[in-house]
Picture 1 (cartoon, rainbow, N blue to C red):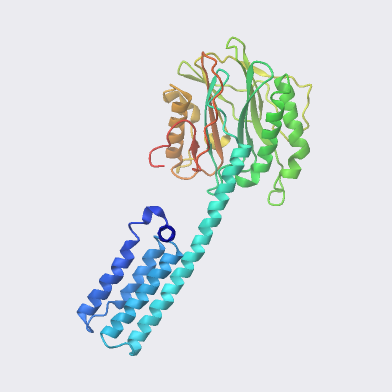
Picture 2 (tube, rainbow, N blue to C red):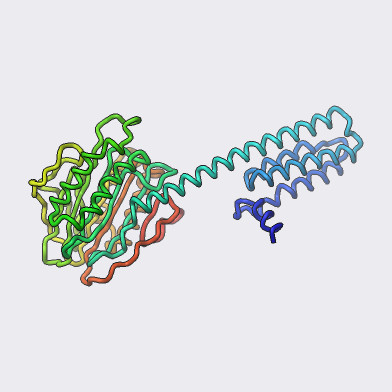
Length: 396
C-alpha cells in the first residue's frame, strides 16, 4: 500500500495520470527508431522531449525519473551503435543531462510557487469565512442570494462587504459597503464595518443609532487597520444600511452613506431607490447620533431588492461602456433571487469580457409571504467567483 501511494504521488496532478505515460513511451520509441536507423540518422537528441513534457504533466520527481531514463537511453544507443567514446555522442549525452537537470530544477521551483499560491488561497478562504460569513439563505421572511468577485486572483475577499443580522425587534438589518481601494489591502477596513454591524444590529433600537455606531467605529479605528504605507490618501467606506420589518405592512427603511442606490423590483418594474437624505461615507466626518434621518420605502411580498457595489455598475466592456445594471435587471426573469443573480452574474462576465478590475458584490433579497426558520449558510466554494444557490455560468 505504501509503494502504491508513493507512485500515485508521483503522478501529480491526478487529472494527468494517463498522460504521464506519453514521455516514457516516447523514450522507448525514440530509442528503438534510433537503433533501427543506425548511424545515418541520429534521433537521440529528441529524447530531451521526454523530461520537458513530463514537467508539464507531473512533479519534479517524475520529471527527474524521465530525465534519468532519457540519459540512460542515450547511453544505451551509443553503446549499441559502438560510438560511446566519440565526441559527438559524449556531447549529446552531456547536453541531454544538463537540459534534463535544468528542467527538473525549474519544475521544482514551479511546484514551490504552486504550494505558496495554494496556501495563500487557503488563507484567503479562511479570512472570507471569518470576515465575510455567507448570509443564510433565509432570514425571517427574506430569501437571500449573493455574489462576491475579488479583483485579485489570489484573493477571495477584498474591499467590498455585506452582512445580514436580526434586530432586537421583529426585523432584519442589512449592510452592504465598499472600501476605497480593493483587494487584500482593504480587508482591514472592511472588517471594521462588519464587526461593528454584527455587534450593533441587535443592540441599537433605531437604524440611525446603528449607522452612528458604524461611523464611530470607522473614525476611531480606521488608521490602525488601513494600509497607510502603500496608500497615504483618505480612507473611507461607502455603505448602505437597511431595516426590513417582518410585517410586510410596515415600511422598510434605509440610510445611504455615499453608496450606489439599491434597485427595487416590483411586478417586473425596476425602481432606483435614490436617498432623499443621504449621508457622507463612513470616515469622512464625525458621526452624529442626533441625526435620525432615514428613507422609508415599501417592500411587500414578492418584491426583490438588488444591492450592489460600484464594482458592478462601473465594470467596463472592452469598448469602455459601463454595465447598465438597472436596464439588465429589468430584462431578466425575476422568478427567484437565485435565478436573477445567476442572470446578472453571467451577463456581467460577458459584458466585461475578462477578469474584473475591481471588487464587486451583489445581494438579491426577496420578501416571501411565509416566515420560515433560519437555514444554515451555504459553505463557501473554492472558486474566486462565488454565486450562492445556483450553478456557475457555463464554462466557469
